[in-house]
Each structure stands twice: as structure tokens, then as C-alpha cells.
Amino acid sequence: MKKFLTTAAVAAIAATPALAKVTIQDLDMTGDSFATYEEVRNAIPGMDMTDFVAIDGNGDRRLSAEEVGAADAQTILTQHQMRGIKERPLVLLDPDGDGFMSYDDITNVHPALSKNTFQEIDANGDGRLSYAEFYTNETQTALAQCAESTFVDLADLDTNGDNFVSMDELKGGYPKVTNADFDTIDLNNDNRISSVELLAPTAECLKR
Image 1 (cartoon, rainbow, N blue to C red):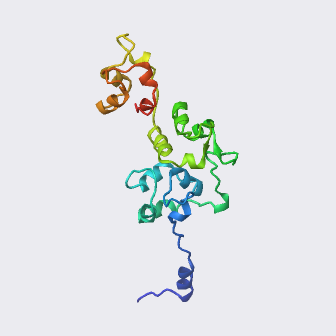
Image 2: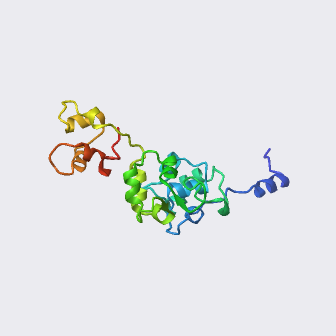
Image 3: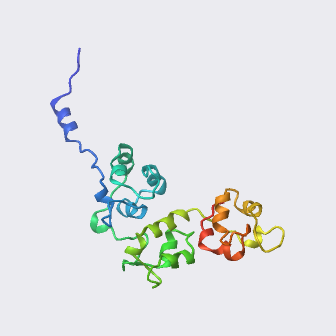
């Protein structure tokens, strides 16, 4: 004997609300039609970097409308509670809500960012980042590249005591380093790295 859903059951199913779809407009604070990690976290505090990377299909450190609209992305995005628009100041990086971010504010979220890099991305040199400065490609690239960086002092790498670091010595502290990394850090192309070069912004994002 066939079983049929009662009218009440059908009505209950029909009345069950579907999860609201998340759009790029829900996440994009700056109007550039993309959403960075900070923008996503402001809208959806429960999101973490693992979720973000899973959605960022092309790895450009920002989400496009197409990436946000993908079915897998929607599964991730809709499992977390979204803040209302009026609840979304850049609280992660601008805790006092004054529209600017100090070096200490930034390093609370991005602890590997060096003071030198901060000064480089602080376009007007006022010792703080405005939202406009924060959302430049230069700033976002610097923050993403240094997300996992660690620092090793030259003395810890210089095994032969000549006050320089060779490729082999660099690999002793940074096993994942490549010849291309070494060439980038070796600013004067003398096939060795000095203490000045090791402290330069080009070396700040070495990963161990």
C-alpha cells in the first residue's frame, strides 16, 4: 500500500525556509566587486582562512562574484551567521572604529608583517593605514605573502662565520627556499646574502 504525505506535512516542508544565498554584494565593502579575507570575516565572523582558501579558486587572495556564487562556496558561506550591514566596521583591524589602522592593529591579525613593510604600504607616511591604503593590491599582497613567514637571524644561518649567507646556508634555516627566492633576496647579485639583504622587505616572507 502506497503511503502519501499528509496535507499538513506537505505544508510544513513548503514552509521550511531555504538558506539565503550569499552574494558578492553581501561581502564587498569597497565596491570593487571582490571580497578580501578581512571583508569576508567582517560579514561572516565564523569564516576562517581555510574556508576562504577553499572558495578562492584562482588563488588571487580575493573572492569574485563567480567564486562566491559557486555551489561549494555557498555551502561554506551559509553555514555561518552573517552580520548585518550596520554591524560591520572593520573590527578585526580597526578596533576603535576611527577609520585607521596602526601597525599594532594590523599585527594583531597579521603578526608576521614587518615594520619595514608597514612603512612601505603606508603611502602617505602618517604611521597608520586608511581603509583606502589597506585595500590596495600592494597591501593585500604583502599581507598574504607574509602570512606564514618566520625570521631567522643571519648569525644563526652563517655557519662559516664570514658574515654572509650562501644558498646552502640559507637552506639550513629555510629548507623550502628555492634558487629563485635566493636570487630575489640577493639584491646586488654577488651570490651571497648580507645582513642588510636579509632584513630587506624582499626577504621578509621566507617560509620555513
